[in-house]
Image (cartoon, rainbow, N blue to C red; front, side, top):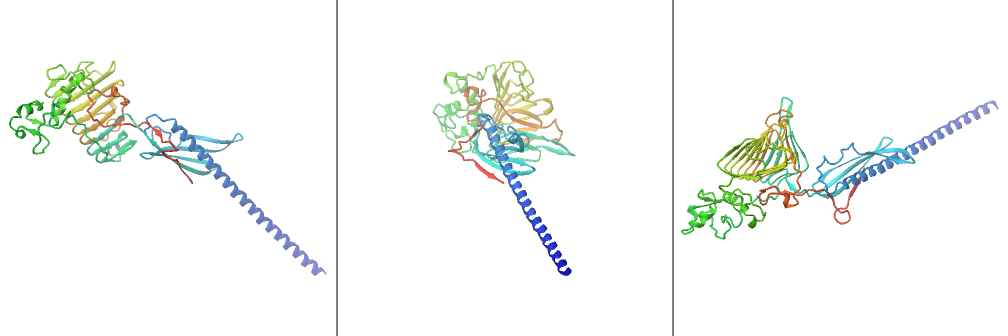
Length: 447
């Protein structure tokens, strides 16, 4: 009997152990399900927080419509939009959102929500366009090269606002920073100064043919009896009719008669007038009287700092030259605009720490544009030939090169710089989100 009682006790103990184990399993399974449910709820809440971040960033970008947006400088960084998602007055999570360009016509918002340490990310893409009414900060038809320098741990930088655009290639090195787009192989047309058919400089209908197709017409090309026609079109009297004659005629004759030119201006720079210079010139500061709107130089030009006094009232000044133009440390005030139009090359250089162009500079080089060492420009620079930017020596702060957009809206021709070449390549980049119903449906991704 006692033996049976012992056996019953063993069975009861075993049964109790089984119950404890079963209870433990049930509790463990329940806890696991509760934890999984909590994780799922946290991730769902984090997803909602991330979506809230994307929607707030979208509203922020929407508020920038009609403004010039320079990516990524004009939109918040990843840490600058942090909000809380509230439920019953309790903070349950945060999100961080940022926006940047994906392609030339799509921008993406990346928003990450966090709830109880668990994260969910939302990515949404929107279409946009951006018409910017001005000239390219830096553009050319030939190849473009930008390079900073490094030596013994010292660096000099090239910093540029885009778009930088080339009809060929754009090459940079590791010490070049570009905010905005870098555009290669663009379909650019060179500005042309011919008013009528090529080799009819004065547009009188009397055309001389380039019989050997070498890009110019010489005395040897003309038929007998057309000497008078040749003489009228050979504006430079150098025995050749070419683009340079068209360039000179456009500025010194066509734009000298306000009643008969498309711009309605009289530049007053025909040969013999006060602002017409024959032969190459060197202009030191204050060489040109204040208030002179334009000068023409039949030759090359060397300029130190500025050829006019740049402080005081607003100053808009244009220099047109048939040769090369070299500007050492170009300088102007915030309310000034300097326009340089060169049939040849434009060369510049300076020291970034010693100032630079704070107003606008507008440059057209029918040849190349070269900028060595440091300096700063705000405005529009375009070359028919190549562009070469090189800081040369690694002296931080002194030889950095900054290339920035100007701030003049060219949508109204009245705001165009005086003497801007016909066909100067301009761009329009005002930010606009595309219509979601007809132009671009937003693309949402979650992970």
